[in-house]
Image (cartoon, rainbow over all chains, first blue to last red; front, side, top):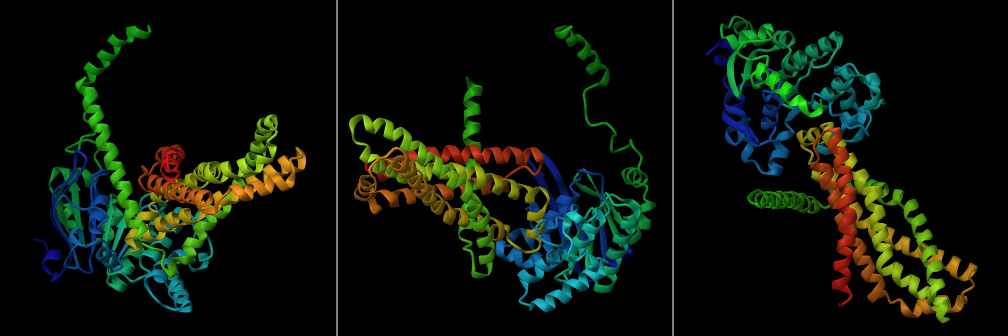
Length: 280
Length: 258
């Protein structure tokens, strides 16, 4: 056990021996991981390894085939629909696309969860929304509509909305994907600040090694449906396991093959030439 | 032979699965009655689905009423019974053409929009983000649309019939010269609220339910891609039009004591 895991007394999210299939494809095959309270935990791995699926399992949007998913000691897959919606009030999630409601202004987007889940008077909601927008630096954009925002701004508004109810747990789905370096720096800084100032437990799903490693307390690397490595960023960088090395250094071919499984190259080329007779 | 049998079995299983999912969506959503706090959502949907469909419904109703008068007059005048024109047009509109054509128009105008809107919400993760905020999309998105269709459709069908009757009177009475007194009094005598108008309303309520159900389900169940949304929108229009026509046959069979 490494240091980060040892000094935590309570775990915010526990995932034990989870398997999950989508059709014939096995996405997870016995995944175990824990997210200590108040830490930034990164889940990394090549595209298509089901990182986003993992967030959806934690949020209860999907149910695992077997295994345990616990948030704050409550078993998510066993909850009824209304219990689940209750638990989700203490979770925030930042979607890759931002997922802002396109028919509402920036202000109304951030106010949306407050108006639904609280009975606060409108002037207090206004103050809260402006505070959240100020913290992501977009108070001035409160009257714009999502279609008028850049990708980075979109994600910042979505972040303000995700933290509107001050959740204890926040999940980021590919928060750095498709951003320019400045916008990326802003998001990195925001994730870190939110974690430090409000003590929010943060789960980041990403494949951007450097940005993620710069803020994460703990990293899990997932590949082929299993956790293939975990630890503090610097430990992981020194790992000898070939799959982890390939992923961290970005080597095109290795244990994770460059080629999608296919028939023998020479045979397929030759077979194509024989068939050509049909059309001359 | 065996593979044909297997395909048939697979098709039936798939069909049952889709019906099951659609049914459970409807069942779950319909019990989320629009609460008072959600009234603005319902009103907005009644506007989107109902009020915005008024123009196309009224225009179609008028022209169909006018055409019915033209064709009806041609036939009736041969037997000197053109005074029955008003009665005939009114019965046909109130019992059949009003609910059915308004239902078809509703499917094309409102159903397709509902599917595209919900499908796009799904594709842009708006539904997911709503769920993750602890807001039930069945309550907030699906239920108001189902109820709005339920409320708007009979009103649209009635408007269609009323405007159609007006159009037929313009053509029949004012242009072709059918005697006005006979036109209206035959209608008044022959059209009964309980045995004609009410049955037409029942039909339009059923069509409203079915069309919005299909539209909402297709949007909710779509593959979250542009092809997926395009296909789902097409399916909404095709399925709900066919459903309206087939249901009309059975409703007529049951309600009019054949």
